[in-house]
Amino acid sequence: MTLLPGSGDPHRFGTEAFYAALGRAFVAMCAVVPFLFLVEVVDQGLAFGLDATAGIIPKRIDGLDGVFFSPFLHHGFDHLYSNSIPLILLGTFVLAAGARRFLWSTLLIILVSGLGVWFTGSPNSVVVGASGVIFGYLGILLTRGIVERSWWNFAVFVLVGLLYGWQLVGVLPTDERISWQGHLFGLLGGVVAAILFRRRRHDPYRSESTLPMP
Image (cartoon, rainbow, N blue to C red; front, side, top):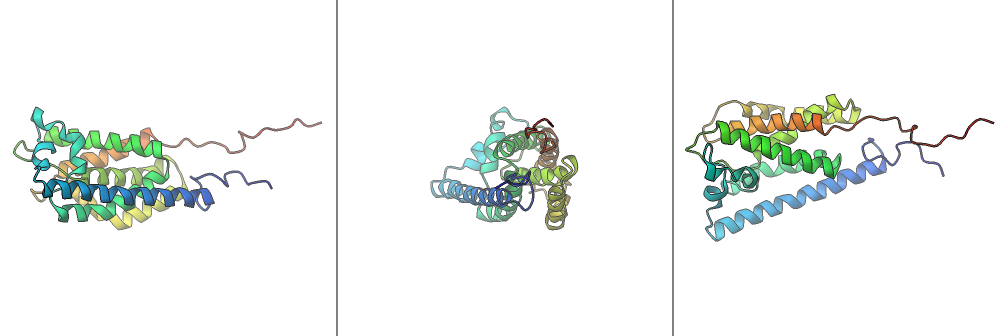
């Protein structure tokens, strides 16, 4: 049996490989949220006070390590609940495009968002939460449809825009309790990640061997 070019490509919409990749990504992201809840349960149950000790404290050296730890911490379960669904949904679409790209993109978003908060935030605040990463994934999905010129990514662009486009107001200074800096720099980190780690287009026929004409 001869397979059509791209029929096993997980990046091509409609193939079995595509749906399998999307399913695996969804399961993986669903496993992330219970881990975040476990961290919150341990933090509150044992009164570790991780928010204060491992969160980002802007413009202070002792708060710089929070750049890496803050995405795993939240100000209570209500904060975590509000981040869970968008984290699963947006993360699924980002992860389905490849685990390596997902990991590098997430790391870049964490760095850009965290450092942006550290440099521009108020030194009297402590910033925690996965919101910066969520906005980063939003930035990836909104940009990837353009830079990769894929119909599937354009569809995701429209879907995400309809579902979460309204959240873009979160990059503007509003509620003092919300780190708009984390949202803004997370979004910018996602845009940069979508460009740096974009999938190069190629002709599926080029990799096939061709017999010379007699």
